[in-house]
Length: 309
Image (tube, rainbow, N blue to C red; front, side, top):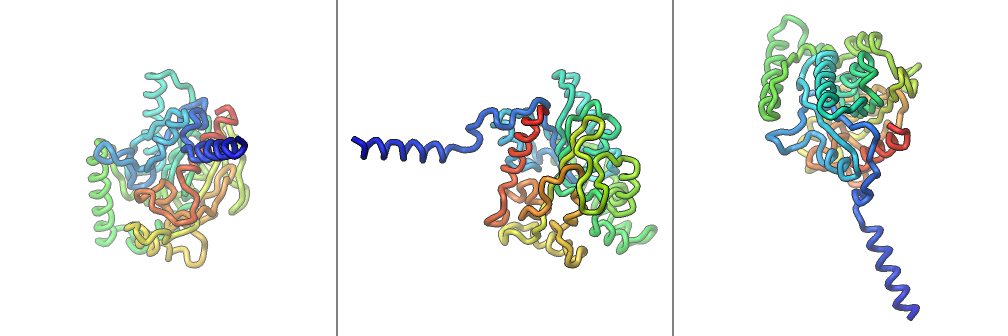
């Protein structure tokens, strides 16, 4: 009798432990909708099905969250992209009556979301940036040095990036304006410093530190990775390994230095992710022992829920 009871309890425990995290139907049910803001050369969906935020919106929704992935210019100034986000938030507010939103921005999506919170704090409950170059990227600096103003080399680089941006816009079913120079100037060290002076909310008081957790009733969080070549099967990793050379021996994710990702409350800055692992790309390929990015976003949604956001 006891033997069968023990086996039955063991089977039940195994089944419970094997249930997917999405079985917790309210784990990610935030008060305000979550809006995902993509980075440079990003999109919401390609051909209507392939997510920039691979598997992330689905898992957040499975836990009870309302989630929207905006599609803004693949390349442009942070402020231009921010105004596009504001337009989308205003539309969602008009359609569904939402009052505020939890913005999560990856890469250039971080400064973009910060712009929105700076000029329209009435629309924003929180900003979470992931792998964002808040102080600029040495890769952008290197491109600017290699292709200075008024040179044929710069024209070629701008032409190629603009063409790629337009292809991405077409495949994502959108036609937002593109500005490769604007993106470069937004992401280099000088441009980032100018942007931070105009929009300092959540800025750390010292290099590699944390910033104010709450400014104008908006909560600020940040996170980032410090691995580069994480999976031999990922076709993007060799490119990130090459771009990481711009940082020398400084920890980075291939495009963003560890401390440059700091803003507001720093959740963690050394996940075992490269720049695209941070959004679960490519096709969820990542390091064998690295934290699942989807779990990070679910945990952050749960954190926002616990804060009443």
